[in-house]
Image (tube, rainbow, N blue to C red; front, top):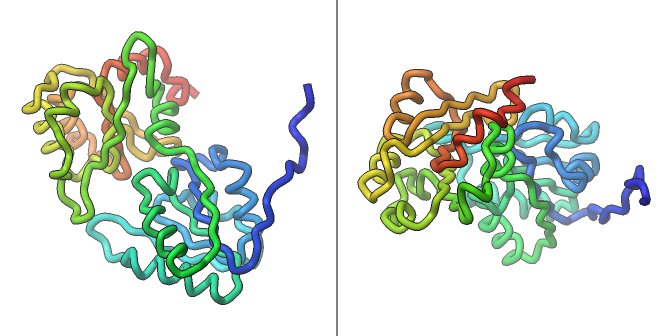
Length: 262
């Protein structure tokens, strides 16, 4: 068997190009080789609030670091402003890395930024990252799928573009047909989300977990039921970002909590 090459062949990061890359859920070790390559070659890194500082510090010396984070309820750059800034930087013949937490195409608004680049004729590359709904669950000791628990999983956003609980979702259909639900950005509307799921037919005593600041040294995992997880979150002052997991896969955590035992 051939060993993995010390310097695997990687695509050139050319001036005037934008790379939209996922930084993973937090742990710098979950960066992909291609994302690290981008960090080490970019002239400017435009990064989000959810990108761990240890990851930003991997940028090449001399790279310009631009913060473009958006956090609910706090002053932040608008999405059009961020997209237009990527275009402006590329037109200055810079190698632009747009670094986003998780995966840029999973609730990361990467598609909007890529569309702006495409419409403006800016060449770009998408670098997928490990999304929190997979990597964060693994660090919590909760499998996304398990043969005895589920044959389907749904990733759901906890708020729409206006910051409200998504009204376009068919909550009864989700409650009936998907054995495991992972709700991103769940904290703000956690109580309402759990009540909607219960009203739609989900069991109040179904296993549920809340994973906060997944894969980092500050990770917190609360387990309970769909009916009491919101009260537990308030009691323990859980901090964002946090995702809700509903389903029997939560029970696996009792045996699989490897990160919490380190």
